[in-house]
Length: 484
Image (tube, rainbow, N blue to C red; front, side, top):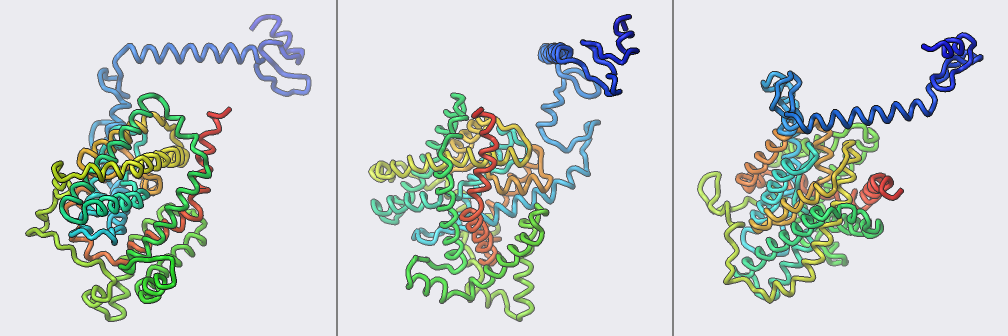
């Protein structure tokens, strides 16, 4: 310390550069000039360290050269510092993996197309959803910057699929040629969506998707919520609902006994959510998992056999897989339906406006799901990278004549809050979904309709009433730094 600084300190006068103690015995911090110099030095040191790391091999925490710690962490959590498996971590991931698989399975059983006269449509619908979901899960695991995200087929696009099916049926009827054209269009639409995503990401146009008008997003999501709400009624009652007195009487009044369990389950869940005030992230998935044993317990208490309940319409019908044993012969039908000689390119041309609308509508999920999930998990999103990942997942699904997929916000949040993370856990989810792809049609016969109906009803109400506001809020939060 210099003589001038010493005199300044003893006389209780702050040195103009280094600070000191004031006459009121307050501690005076460094001056702005000193802070600026220190910041510049810190930035220079950080830059030198970064350049040194880039120029030399990465090292582990043990100091052994040639091993990248960060890439080791990205390859999958679950390994201890000594290279052994972290048993506690693996055991902690099991509930999250199971919850993620159950949520996907419930989505697969929740929507069976009811108005398309296709043989085996229930099996096709389930396996198409699961195939697209597995592809998305694998791609997101390796391409996304999130380590706790889940993929899912875009269930919100179902109205477009129904419209595409109607266009094909109007042109070709309901024979094998129509199925070939329909699956060709499904695959073609996924490739279009995938290329759209990929090019936006590759051209560094990720920020463009942020500028969709919020009222358009809210209107689309609210409309999808209303559609899913109606689908919940149709799935539960196994009938077609229409907004007319006849539709109300035939679908709701005549089948109110089937709707009663759904209403009861949804009412109890809403009460629990209100009482707990959202403090328990696992409330919804645990509740959905418990609805099935509760339903079976109610049948037992009332003395009603499962066979009788199935006759009354409380269960999905047993699906004829057409094969021997657990693995059906039609396991790969969704990959073999397309025969280019049977494809009606006239129907494809008629479907182009719908395909363009589907591509645009698929794009609006990205500025909602990714920023919202990033805010929820406190992660810095890379929109361009996520767009490229969505491009890969949709193009690969399209090559197998699958449907569009995306990073699902709701399931990902449940999975993340269940402590699910890491590449190994994400692959485990994909493996379990593959097993459901094989044996799902047999398992579905044991799923009560009210379980799928409750899930759809709850999601539909949330989308129609609350979800638009929840989506716009994190979107605004994510946009604020970009707009200033």
